[in-house]
Length: 218
Image (cartoon, rainbow, N blue to C red; front, side, top):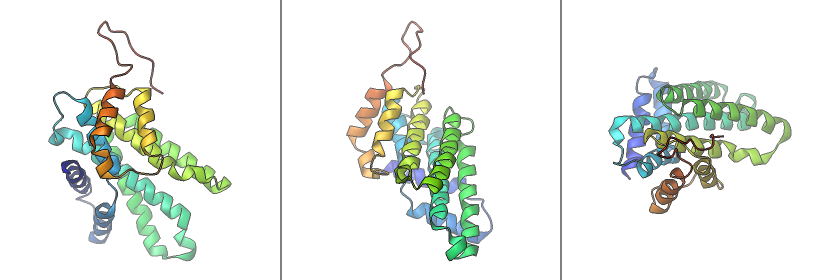
């Protein structure tokens, strides 16, 4: 479970300077209770497609933390939109939580800003905003898991690009399939089956030795 610990450490380090203490404590508590699947998949993707294996201390853990923080911030935003605590709950806590959500997303963006996954991170947030708007106006429950689908795709993009691999359409599709029932467990993601599947799909449609480029990503 080295990957799980690495994601947690990097995510906590990214928000270590948040003040005041009350705000920082709530962020820490949320990360302690969180599923770390998005960050773990980032590291698994990097490890499965790199040769030699990537060093977790060499910036890859920061990519994983970036993906994780974006997910936590958007997930909290989704929860607030569903519960609407400003109407029937604790308004002060709700105000604090929306600030926490903003901090988490912004810190996640900061960690991914200078990586090849930056554009994919922006796309996740834009898609989330669109989906939430549609969800509120249509009650389309199929959109409830859209965030998990998008965030696991971002995780794979952030991971394989750390290994110098361009994310193929088949690789992206596999990532979305992992979220068909919500976020998978850390144990499932750390199994050899996932690593083998990522490795196989990352090798498809890559540039050939003569410089011929594969089909463009979508």
